[in-house]
Length: 294
Image (tube, rainbow, N blue to C red; front, side):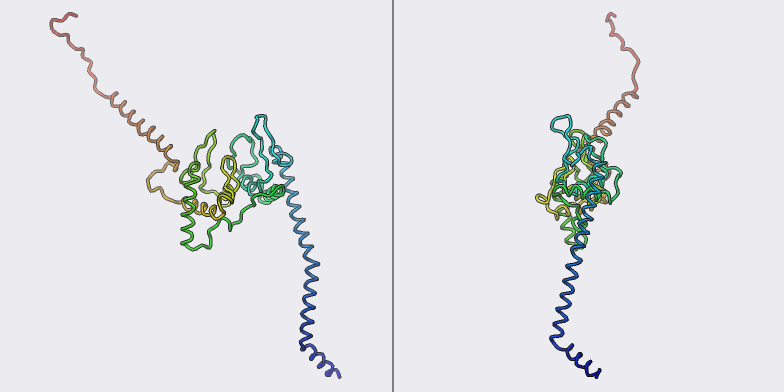
């Protein structure tokens, strides 16, 4: 009796209708589970983002609001047309990651150019402040390694990227950063920093956001691929030998001209003075001509 009942059930399970019922039942269970669990996961992610922004605002209020304002709107100075700290609304997370990640911010004297120094905040705190500034208005996001890396390219593609990057750099960047990225002097006491040894991410962010006196190369006027190519070119010149001999840091014709004048012409003048000082001089007085009266 039992074997006969089990056989009937087994035959029903092997039928086409049974398979369709099982499939529909599985889809129904999957949809119910997704409906029940997916909103909870989204809420947890949203809460995580909100907590990150809140933590970033607390850090901003303590370390940045004295110059940039309580709402990052910027603070004017006594001098007309100047600001103590510029507005951060719309600068995006990339600007915060660059300025704080390189130690340029916070700074003691806002009227001076911000040099790179030891970093005050850790990575989590920098990410929180970047999230807070990014929440104020749309702006450039922090780039990923895929944005500035040429890994995965063939050798031919790498060479083409480096050549393109060199052309862009020599056209747009050498006036300030010198032909080999050694930096140089700028008007009003400023300077263009050296690019050798700078992390790829920070070079990309500097191109994207235009810190201080540097122009802003947004994705509209310099594509992400072009920024990547510039970084690839800069990586190749870090270990490039000085084929012309002593390059004096690669600072260009100004330093070389100064070297020529001070050591070259100065050395010749000094040698001439030395020759004159050691030349034999006569102490005899000339005799008066005969018949001439004293």
